[in-house]
Image (cartoon, rainbow, N blue to C red; front, side, top):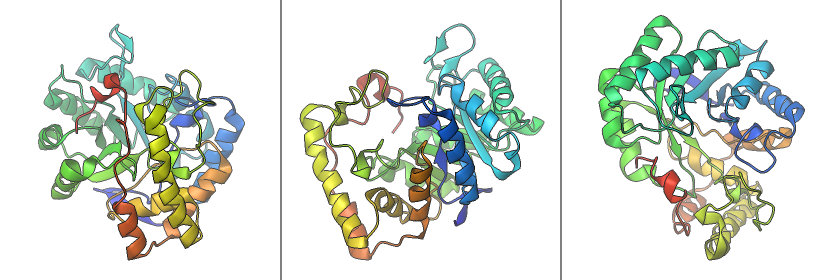
Length: 325
């Protein structure tokens, strides 16, 4: 496993998104023992970068990591997120990045994770009701107190990133980015490179679509992120299967898996990028981390880069309203 720096924070080239172990997908939360084995095996494979958030569950995912990493905390660069739970009364799925809410949120996360510090603390979504300067000012205080080592933003646009960085250095920005979602390339990635901010793509496998294993949506239950998602419904889904087929063709040519092709393409986009593919299965974490050693040819990279955009939006209308791109 190679390692890179997100600004000054050293992480494994490929991380692990833990969300699906507890939240977001049809079978999330059904096999804690396998999730723990996956986390432990990831560390054995050299993965150091693990991502969670208080909203995942809510709270259950942080609690799972706290139990799984109890004796291995020093092996992990631990990232979590705040801002989608309002502790001031509005509750879950309500934006709240007020300084008072951040104070409450960080104490809860520290307790659930069983640690005295968070390595990378992200604002989960930009709160239009709170100036980003106030939010980052509160985070800077947590850095000074040693409770947080570095700060990040998730799905933030260029203006917010620049304003935040002027208050306190931003270490990383996390956004959806993959062969399936290329939005950050036009405006966000150039700014991050100007400011020396690392980039953390989440959903690098297109919520499983780029693995080539999803040929039907019949098994998606209510509560699964993909149930009702525009890219996974109706004619859009059928059209998008052609993209998965193109990734599969490159995978067959390179004698690797489609997931490894999708990750290898991402890694080829720059040495300041550390994707966090999510899984709760040991064999999948083995497959994903092996992508670090794969080098696609220039022709293969060009063919992948030239794939047409998928049909349908990345989120429902409500989800899109929370994004800055």
